[in-house]
Length: 275
Ligand SMILES: [Zn+2]
Ligand SMILES: [Zn+2]
Image (tube, rainbow, N blue to C red):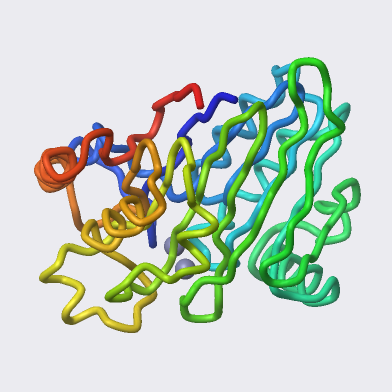
Protein backbone atom coordinates (compact mmCIF):
# COMPACT_ATOMS: atom_id res chain seq x y z
CA UNK A 1 0.00 0.00 0.00
CA UNK A 2 1.15 3.53 -0.71
CA UNK A 3 0.43 6.38 1.67
CA UNK A 4 0.56 9.99 0.45
CA UNK A 5 0.33 13.01 2.75
CA UNK A 6 -1.92 15.82 1.42
CA UNK A 7 -2.21 17.73 4.68
CA UNK A 8 -0.58 17.25 8.10
CA UNK A 9 -1.67 20.47 9.84
CA UNK A 10 -4.43 20.71 12.44
CA UNK A 11 -7.07 23.27 13.38
CA UNK A 12 -6.63 25.71 10.48
CA UNK A 13 -4.55 25.88 7.30
CA UNK A 14 -1.48 28.11 7.30
CA UNK A 15 0.65 29.50 4.48
CA UNK A 16 3.88 31.40 3.96
CA UNK A 17 7.58 30.64 3.75
CA UNK A 18 7.76 29.74 7.47
CA UNK A 19 5.51 26.73 6.81
CA UNK A 20 6.85 25.41 3.49
CA UNK A 21 8.73 22.41 4.84
CA UNK A 22 5.95 20.70 6.82
CA UNK A 23 3.14 22.23 4.76
CA UNK A 24 0.05 24.25 5.60
CA UNK A 25 -2.89 22.07 4.58
CA UNK A 26 -5.06 20.39 7.20
CA UNK A 27 -5.69 16.67 7.73
CA UNK A 28 -5.78 14.54 4.60
CA UNK A 29 -3.96 11.24 3.95
CA UNK A 30 -4.52 8.96 0.97
CA UNK A 31 -3.79 5.24 1.14
CA UNK A 32 -3.72 3.44 -2.20
CA UNK A 33 -4.38 -0.29 -2.40
CA UNK A 34 -4.74 -1.49 -5.99
CA UNK A 35 -7.59 0.38 -7.66
CA UNK A 36 -8.95 1.59 -4.32
CA UNK A 37 -8.03 4.82 -2.63
CA UNK A 38 -8.84 5.27 1.06
CA UNK A 39 -8.81 8.92 2.09
CA UNK A 40 -8.39 9.60 5.79
CA UNK A 41 -10.13 12.91 6.47
CA UNK A 42 -10.82 15.63 3.95
CA UNK A 43 -9.20 18.76 5.35
CA UNK A 44 -7.93 21.53 3.07
CA UNK A 45 -5.39 19.12 1.54
CA UNK A 46 -8.23 17.16 -0.04
CA UNK A 47 -8.82 19.88 -2.64
CA UNK A 48 -5.45 19.23 -4.33
CA UNK A 49 -6.06 15.48 -4.06
CA UNK A 50 -9.38 16.01 -5.87
CA UNK A 51 -7.55 17.76 -8.73
CA UNK A 52 -5.10 14.87 -9.03
CA UNK A 53 -7.92 12.31 -9.05
CA UNK A 54 -9.37 13.83 -12.22
CA UNK A 55 -6.45 12.32 -14.18
CA UNK A 56 -5.87 9.14 -12.14
CA UNK A 57 -6.72 5.47 -12.80
CA UNK A 58 -8.25 5.03 -9.33
CA UNK A 59 -11.66 3.38 -9.66
CA UNK A 60 -13.04 3.62 -6.13
CA UNK A 61 -12.56 6.35 -3.54
CA UNK A 62 -13.51 5.68 0.10
CA UNK A 63 -13.41 8.68 2.42
CA UNK A 64 -13.19 7.93 6.15
CA UNK A 65 -14.06 10.94 8.30
CA UNK A 66 -12.69 10.85 11.85
CA UNK A 67 -15.22 13.58 12.75
CA UNK A 68 -16.79 16.73 11.33
CA UNK A 69 -14.61 19.56 12.68
CA UNK A 70 -13.79 22.01 9.89
CA UNK A 71 -10.10 21.09 9.64
CA UNK A 72 -11.16 17.52 8.72
CA UNK A 73 -13.90 18.26 6.18
CA UNK A 74 -13.24 21.64 4.55
CA UNK A 75 -11.78 20.07 1.39
CA UNK A 76 -14.53 17.47 1.01
CA UNK A 77 -16.60 19.18 -1.74
CA UNK A 78 -13.53 19.57 -3.96
CA UNK A 79 -12.60 15.94 -3.42
CA UNK A 80 -16.15 14.94 -4.37
CA UNK A 81 -16.03 17.09 -7.51
CA UNK A 82 -12.55 15.81 -8.46
CA UNK A 83 -13.45 12.17 -7.98
CA UNK A 84 -16.42 12.92 -10.26
CA UNK A 85 -17.67 10.73 -13.07
CA UNK A 86 -16.30 7.28 -13.76
CA UNK A 87 -15.40 6.51 -10.16
CA UNK A 88 -17.35 5.24 -7.22
CA UNK A 89 -17.20 7.50 -4.23
CA UNK A 90 -18.26 6.60 -0.69
CA UNK A 91 -18.07 8.54 2.58
CA UNK A 92 -17.86 6.65 5.89
CA UNK A 93 -18.11 7.91 9.47
CA UNK A 94 -18.58 6.14 12.78
CA UNK A 95 -20.54 6.67 15.97
CA UNK A 96 -23.63 8.19 14.36
CA UNK A 97 -26.83 7.26 12.53
CA UNK A 98 -27.40 7.50 8.77
CA UNK A 99 -29.64 10.54 9.34
CA UNK A 100 -26.97 12.27 11.43
CA UNK A 101 -24.32 11.65 8.77
CA UNK A 102 -26.49 12.98 5.96
CA UNK A 103 -27.68 15.99 7.98
CA UNK A 104 -24.13 16.89 9.06
CA UNK A 105 -22.82 16.87 5.49
CA UNK A 106 -25.85 18.60 4.00
CA UNK A 107 -25.76 21.33 6.61
CA UNK A 108 -22.05 22.00 6.12
CA UNK A 109 -22.16 22.10 2.34
CA UNK A 110 -25.28 24.01 1.38
CA UNK A 111 -26.38 27.66 1.36
CA UNK A 112 -25.51 29.92 3.10
CA UNK A 113 -22.22 28.16 3.95
CA UNK A 114 -21.45 26.67 0.56
CA UNK A 115 -22.58 27.74 -2.93
CA UNK A 116 -24.30 24.51 -3.98
CA UNK A 117 -27.39 22.47 -3.46
CA UNK A 118 -26.44 19.67 -1.11
CA UNK A 119 -28.49 17.24 -3.16
CA UNK A 120 -26.38 18.13 -6.23
CA UNK A 121 -23.02 17.79 -4.53
CA UNK A 122 -23.66 14.42 -2.91
CA UNK A 123 -26.05 12.91 -5.46
CA UNK A 124 -23.55 10.32 -6.75
CA UNK A 125 -21.96 9.60 -3.38
CA UNK A 126 -22.89 6.69 -1.13
CA UNK A 127 -22.96 7.55 2.56
CA UNK A 128 -22.18 4.91 5.19
CA UNK A 129 -22.84 5.49 8.89
CA UNK A 130 -21.27 2.92 11.21
CA UNK A 131 -21.61 2.25 14.91
CA UNK A 132 -18.77 3.45 17.15
CA UNK A 133 -15.99 0.86 17.16
CA UNK A 134 -17.33 -0.89 14.05
CA UNK A 135 -15.32 -3.10 11.68
CA UNK A 136 -15.96 -3.16 7.92
CA UNK A 137 -14.10 -3.62 4.65
CA UNK A 138 -13.56 -1.37 1.65
CA UNK A 139 -12.96 -2.20 -2.01
CA UNK A 140 -13.72 -5.25 -4.04
CA UNK A 141 -10.35 -6.95 -3.86
CA UNK A 142 -8.12 -7.46 -6.88
CA UNK A 143 -4.97 -9.39 -7.58
CA UNK A 144 -3.09 -6.20 -6.78
CA UNK A 145 -4.72 -6.23 -3.35
CA UNK A 146 -7.60 -3.77 -3.38
CA UNK A 147 -9.37 -4.80 -0.21
CA UNK A 148 -8.77 -2.84 2.97
CA UNK A 149 -10.14 -3.98 6.33
CA UNK A 150 -11.10 -1.15 8.67
CA UNK A 151 -11.51 -1.15 12.42
CA UNK A 152 -12.68 1.96 14.24
CA UNK A 153 -12.35 3.04 17.86
CA UNK A 154 -14.01 6.04 19.52
CA UNK A 155 -11.69 8.76 20.85
CA UNK A 156 -11.99 11.26 23.68
CA UNK A 157 -12.44 14.57 21.80
CA UNK A 158 -15.05 17.37 22.06
CA UNK A 159 -18.03 16.12 20.04
CA UNK A 160 -16.35 12.72 19.55
CA UNK A 161 -13.97 11.36 16.92
CA UNK A 162 -12.83 7.95 15.67
CA UNK A 163 -9.45 6.32 15.25
CA UNK A 164 -9.00 3.84 12.41
CA UNK A 165 -6.84 0.83 11.72
CA UNK A 166 -6.51 0.03 8.01
CA UNK A 167 -5.15 -3.37 7.06
CA UNK A 168 -4.40 -4.67 3.59
CA UNK A 169 -1.69 -6.54 1.66
CA UNK A 170 -0.42 -7.92 5.00
CA UNK A 171 0.31 -4.41 6.34
CA UNK A 172 -1.47 -2.10 8.77
CA UNK A 173 -1.75 1.64 9.28
CA UNK A 174 -3.21 3.16 12.47
CA UNK A 175 -4.66 6.69 12.37
CA UNK A 176 -5.22 8.29 15.77
CA UNK A 177 -5.85 12.00 15.66
CA UNK A 178 -7.88 14.51 17.64
CA UNK A 179 -7.50 12.68 20.92
CA UNK A 180 -7.32 14.17 24.39
CA UNK A 181 -4.00 13.36 26.02
CA UNK A 182 -4.26 10.74 28.76
CA UNK A 183 -1.60 9.70 31.29
CA UNK A 184 -1.66 6.08 30.07
CA UNK A 185 -2.45 4.79 26.57
CA UNK A 186 -6.08 3.55 26.54
CA UNK A 187 -6.13 -0.30 26.32
CA UNK A 188 -8.58 -0.30 23.38
CA UNK A 189 -6.22 1.93 21.41
CA UNK A 190 -3.23 -0.27 22.20
CA UNK A 191 -5.22 -3.16 20.68
CA UNK A 192 -6.18 -1.10 17.63
CA UNK A 193 -2.56 -0.09 16.98
CA UNK A 194 -0.85 -3.35 17.98
CA UNK A 195 1.95 -4.24 15.57
CA UNK A 196 0.98 -1.56 13.03
CA UNK A 197 3.58 -0.75 10.40
CA UNK A 198 2.88 2.93 10.94
CA UNK A 199 1.00 4.88 13.61
CA UNK A 200 -0.10 8.40 12.68
CA UNK A 201 -0.82 10.23 15.94
CA UNK A 202 -1.91 13.70 17.08
CA UNK A 203 1.17 15.54 18.44
CA UNK A 204 -0.32 19.03 18.43
CA UNK A 205 0.90 20.31 21.79
CA UNK A 206 4.20 20.34 23.61
CA UNK A 207 4.36 19.03 27.17
CA UNK A 208 4.22 22.67 28.40
CA UNK A 209 1.38 23.78 26.12
CA UNK A 210 -0.90 20.89 27.10
CA UNK A 211 -1.03 22.19 30.69
CA UNK A 212 -3.19 25.13 29.58
CA UNK A 213 -5.01 23.22 26.83
CA UNK A 214 -6.61 20.36 28.75
CA UNK A 215 -10.03 19.57 27.33
CA UNK A 216 -9.17 20.85 23.84
CA UNK A 217 -9.05 17.25 22.62
CA UNK A 218 -5.43 17.05 21.49
CA UNK A 219 -2.28 15.21 22.41
CA UNK A 220 1.49 15.37 22.76
CA UNK A 221 4.68 13.69 21.56
CA UNK A 222 4.94 12.00 24.97
CA UNK A 223 1.49 10.37 24.67
CA UNK A 224 2.18 9.32 21.06
CA UNK A 225 5.47 7.72 22.10
CA UNK A 226 3.78 5.88 24.98
CA UNK A 227 1.11 4.42 22.68
CA UNK A 228 3.71 3.50 20.02
CA UNK A 229 5.73 1.68 22.67
CA UNK A 230 2.76 -0.12 24.24
CA UNK A 231 1.45 -1.24 20.84
CA UNK A 232 4.87 -2.12 19.39
CA UNK A 233 4.37 -0.17 16.16
CA UNK A 234 7.18 -0.04 13.61
CA UNK A 235 7.07 3.67 12.74
CA UNK A 236 5.47 6.61 14.55
CA UNK A 237 4.44 9.72 12.59
CA UNK A 238 3.45 12.90 14.45
CA UNK A 239 0.46 14.65 12.88
CA UNK A 240 -2.09 17.50 13.29
CA UNK A 241 0.65 20.10 13.63
CA UNK A 242 -0.22 23.22 15.57
CA UNK A 243 -0.75 26.17 13.16
CA UNK A 244 1.36 28.35 15.46
CA UNK A 245 4.35 25.97 15.13
CA UNK A 246 6.44 27.03 12.13
CA UNK A 247 9.16 24.98 10.40
CA UNK A 248 11.75 26.04 12.96
CA UNK A 249 9.66 24.75 15.87
CA UNK A 250 8.56 21.57 14.06
CA UNK A 251 12.10 20.66 12.94
CA UNK A 252 13.26 20.89 16.59
CA UNK A 253 10.34 18.66 17.63
CA UNK A 254 11.17 16.32 14.73
CA UNK A 255 14.72 15.90 16.08
CA UNK A 256 13.36 15.42 19.58
CA UNK A 257 10.93 12.64 18.65
CA UNK A 258 13.55 10.88 16.48
CA UNK A 259 16.01 10.93 19.38
CA UNK A 260 13.45 9.34 21.69
CA UNK A 261 12.35 6.49 19.42
CA UNK A 262 13.91 4.97 16.29
CA UNK A 263 11.60 5.40 13.29
CA UNK A 264 9.65 8.30 14.85
CA UNK A 265 9.24 11.58 12.96
CA UNK A 266 6.74 14.34 12.11
CA UNK A 267 4.71 13.97 8.91
CA UNK A 268 5.25 16.46 6.09
CA UNK A 269 2.84 17.35 3.33
CA UNK A 270 3.94 15.71 0.06
CA UNK A 271 5.62 12.69 1.66
CA UNK A 272 4.95 9.27 0.15
CA UNK A 273 5.48 5.99 2.03
CA UNK A 274 5.30 2.37 1.04
CA UNK A 275 3.59 0.52 3.86
ZN1 LIG B 1 -8.50 18.51 14.03
ZN1 LIG C 1 -11.36 17.93 16.11
